[in-house]
Length: 103
Image (cartoon, rainbow, N blue to C red):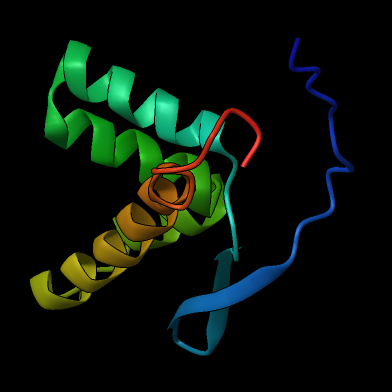
């Protein structure tokens, strides 16, 4: 049997973007549960909805709203942020590929 245990809520964070000098961060590593949620959202609501869900969950409401309200947000900048978030979320699954039940 695999026993799962909750870990402390404190996570290591990394700077992702800034708007007018305010820095917004994301977790260095997200749990595999986030990847499962992303895959479910993709399956049930499509890729765009899943990416929006992942962005808001990984960045948090404050950072997500800051992006939403940034009148000068360029497509290239949004795509770069989305790629980092996507790679972080799916990295939780990719890291475990090819390993046995407990690594």
